[in-house]
Length: 69
Length: 127
View 1 (cartoon, chains in turn green, purple):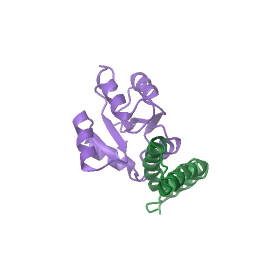
View 2: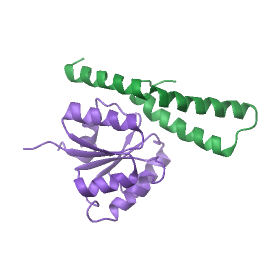
View 3: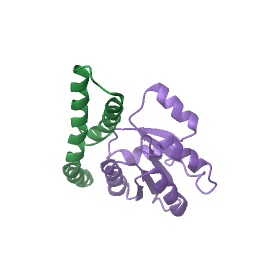
View 4: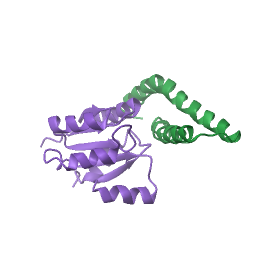
């Protein structure tokens, strides 16, 4: 890995540390929606929120190098 | 020849804005301006006249397509090429976005190490 790439990876690691809490919050919404769905009680508002969070997670996690769930 | 570009990144997610900024500034040595909403992006596009705009599709309040239409309706910002940033990359989505008149689409997740290659490739800045 060249110097530039190393610098970028170091900077990404810093951003990841700062973003982890937000990302874990998004995952919690998905878990909440999954539980509600299994209980047959998934409301539209939570479903829509879960869709938004899943969309955001797709972009964020992959950009940080987590290509697979 | 001055090859320094000024790019406006409009995205409501702090981490995505920062990652894009790092990729473009550290790798390509371009100047990056950021905005966290469509409204702020339009204001900065008018004031800063960037060489290109990277615009997130899914944002609260004013989404990417609405922001793009407003940019197109203003003679000050109409000529600025816009690339959409989106995780919606199915063919039906791509067609809808292409119909808007954007210059291209950058799929999320993107590789920050390659973003500064992808932008000029799509916009024909290499030729």
